[in-house]
Image (cartoon, rainbow, N blue to C red; front, side, top):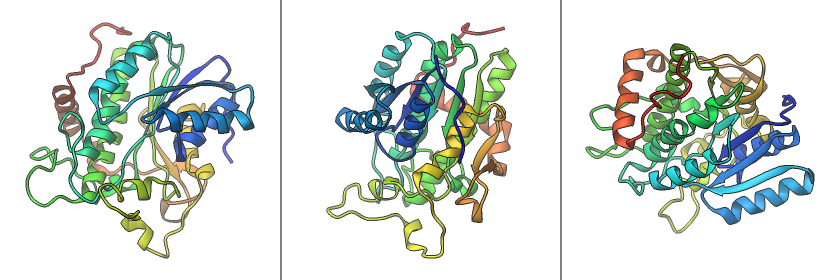
Length: 309
């Protein structure tokens, strides 16, 4: 099992920290001494997660703060409150929604998965850059997915407004976009001389409520995603599944622009290893185009001067 290095004196924001890989990452960061902000859509669930972590680690420093990544106004409010706290050492973009059965939209009218999984984290990351660049050795670790391997950025229809909506392909697009975000941010940091380390990770096939929550949206009865209908696929618990993200966020061996995931069977389970980056995520022109479009859609841009060399 991966052992998180000492995080004493560091502050971390973990989105989606009330359950699954986010909660496990928050628990282990707090156990290693970090002050952890549990960034959650439902504060009551965040408080429950906080209580559970405190029961195991009574001295943990945990703060619950609301953010709805499907609402850019909520993202702005969360960022303003976090910026007021001072330097931010770690941002773990973990939260997401997976494969709702029909096309749904965010508060700002974006397709739900592209909006929640990518545009929300994009806006949050850029808004938090001043706090990150005020820290000594800041990191942003962004959760992608193995589905990014077959994802495609549909520049002609990013919001799936035309033709037949595909829950799975929409999810894959959002997760490819997350991977491209992490690599583009790494390139920007290098170009501007920032000490920021941007990395990405994927959890393989980790058993969390992600597979049911999204697929059950708009349904009377819970439904599991298509992945759960494949009996031979190996899976793992959140203790192991959170490790690629934790490694990306804290390991002294993690490198800018790199991608980490399970190194075992089919890349779905096992100890953390360097993951193969899909070809579409390696296209700098597409990454620049996606970044520019994301700035236009969210109204959030890179800071003009903060941290510039």
